Length: 122
Image 1 (cartoon, one colour):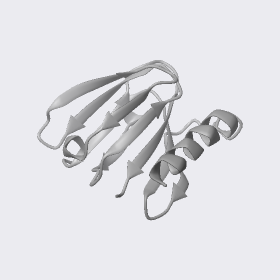
Image 2 (cartoon, rainbow, N blue to C red):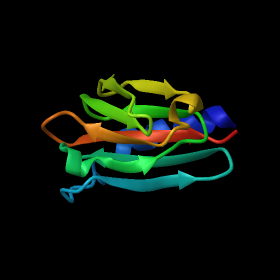
Image 3 (spheres, helix red, strand yellow):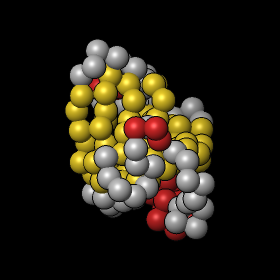
Image 4 (tube, rainbow, N blue to C red):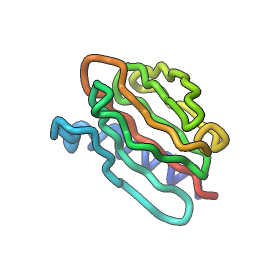
């Protein structure tokens, strides 16, 4: 069942996401699906420190699907910094232990960066 849900999500991403991409000029998170197995959202991360995602944490493993190429700067509460280089069309597994500390995400590029995040609840 989990495989079917993930396949359905990838199909949705490939067929519909560009049509519904946020174009607000503001960093945003848009919920796409939330059930017992997964929570899925689209994030559009605009460049600049003022547009970074507010502090948050993740209690579960996640898969990030890159819709654009880019670099994300992640800074946690302990001021530890690391970077995630992403390539459009690739998926990245992000274990929950990397997201347990509150952190911010900042787009280090010059144009908006779109990703879909799939949080695995089970």
